[in-house]
Amino acid sequence: MAAATTEEGTAKKFWDTFSKESILTLYTPFVVSLASGNLKVDAFGHYLAQDVQFYECFAQAYELAEDCADDDDAKVSIVGLRKRVLKELKHHNSFVQEWGLDLSKETTPNPATTKYTNFVLATASGKVEGVKGPGELATPFEKTKVAAYTLSAIAPSMRLNVFLGKELMDFNGDQHPYKKWIDKYSSEAYQAAMLLTEDVLDKLSVSLTGEELDTMQKLYHQALKLEMEFFRSLPVDQQTVLPLSKQHISTEHRLTIFSDFDLTCTVVDSSAILAEIAIVTARKSVQSQPESQNQPESQSQIARMSSADLRSTCEVLEREYTEEYERCIENMLTNQKAEEFDYEGLKTALEQLSEFERRANTKVIESNVLKGLNLEDIKRAGERLILHDGCMRFFQSITNNQHLNVNVHVLSYCWCADLIRSSFSSGGIPTMNVHANEFLYENSLSTGEIIKTIETPIDKLQAFTNILKNIDESDKTNLTIYIGDSVGDLLCLLEADIGIVIASSSSLQKIATHFGVSFVPLFSALIKKQKEHVEGSAFGWKGLSGILYTVSSWAEVHSFIIGS
Image 1 (cartoon, one colour):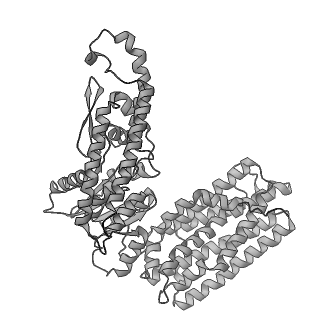
Image 2 (cartoon, one colour):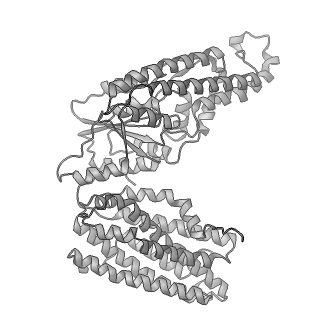
């Protein structure tokens, strides 16, 4: 008997493609307030009234989809989906009665609601690019296509509701005022209804062409974005912990943001980029030598190793660095694990790592692998650096925000600050404050020497401290945020009022935990602060608490600080 195989359906593939975007829905004032339990009832009532508009729209869209489906089984399934929607409308009445809400004044849909419902009904009416008008759908196949498109516009709403329900389950205690809502969307029954919708969608899509499936995916994505926009637009008439920018008064407050660069911002470590530049451009150096062999070294090319020798040397340096780094980390873990946050113990341990980092940089300089790199090649590489999704957009938004009194600084071990400056300049931020090591040049060619500025965790902390010392805090309240990913960022992460760890390394987790540092998902921390908040008071953030906040993407950082 052949083993059963489970092939992922079309709807699930669509969700998997765009699911990361759904995380941003969590970082909205409405969802955080609802999860905390202190969302005002009137705001929840407005949400329920808008939700009624959605269900009425979906019922109408299913009716149109039923007329388009050419398969009897599909028709029966769509009729079942429509009946479930009508049942949900009745279920809403129980919510309204339980909270004593009067929705009679909430009959007007808000703009985000209208935008989504109009999109769904337009799709169900065949108003999709490349699709004939409703009266021109002559063949059963053409009609089935519209039915599939219609379900593509509805399915993301259900997926997002299930996602929210599951995410909020951890905060859903017996006394939670919105327990019934969370229970509903996290229930097996609602998930089964969602899966049934997706199953019908999958069956309707079987006969579609690749181009038509692409259209379905675009409709699905647009529907998801419209549903997310709906949650972002929901009014919340109360103080909320996010976005931070909303609490910011430029005449009274100052925001100082620090970020690491390598792997926090970039996909690949800058040392590997610089090594590759050296190896690739070494060939150019060799080819140009006959023309310049009678000129003094300083007037032509600086003598360099061959491309093959460079690659071999870089591989040896990388292997030796990795092995010794891992030994340093293990040595730091030999002491007894701290029972509570031990900042001074951590700082002492990181001084050992600092000695290693300095030795490693000296090895690189003495190896001559960084000798003869052209400044223009470095700048071009910086322009092409691949950053994590949302990273550049965050820095563009924060530096161009006229309503924020904000300073942004990048602190990095990178050997060459020009690489970093070029990367941000290419993103439209030519004045980014970059604190990193510098190459020494002769006639735009690197000599192989490094002007050492930040080599170690202690150096980073010193730079962090010096920047803050130079800020005049006499007239404004300063809030500091540090974003990093590695052991080298630990001291700065902990000193900042808010330390955000993004996609952290395993060594950071090991070392930090060993010295009593706690990691808390940023979303959970926001809900806790919202829950404990007293209306009229400020949301307090304090450094050296021993707590670091974790995120999985720059989009979360963006939503928390600036908003979605």
